[in-house]
Length: 102
Image (cartoon, rainbow, N blue to C red; front, side, top):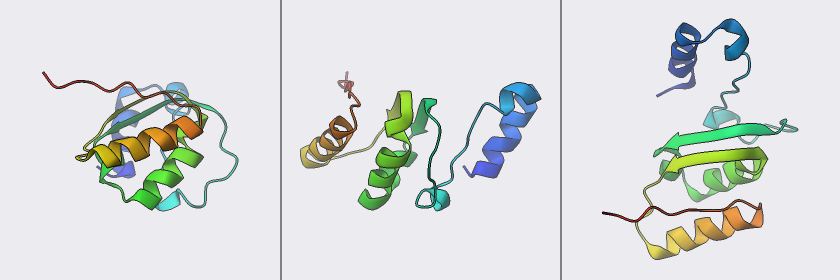
């Protein structure tokens, strides 16, 4: 889903004052973002894990590291991928809680 679709949806369900509190960051802007203020929440349903390693690293360093909370549904198929992601997140003081399959 593109940022414009999400923005359109948020605009229809939120008051203008609450909509102004939400910062949407498209992947195309990730390398040009500087000095973001601390954020409250990061949410990604599969999109984060669909990015290549370079983009994921940029998100971790430029966005996730500034978030107080986050939730991501992620497809990482190998133990090596999971370990690498955990290591990257730990370096920016983020904790990972893995959900076990039922």
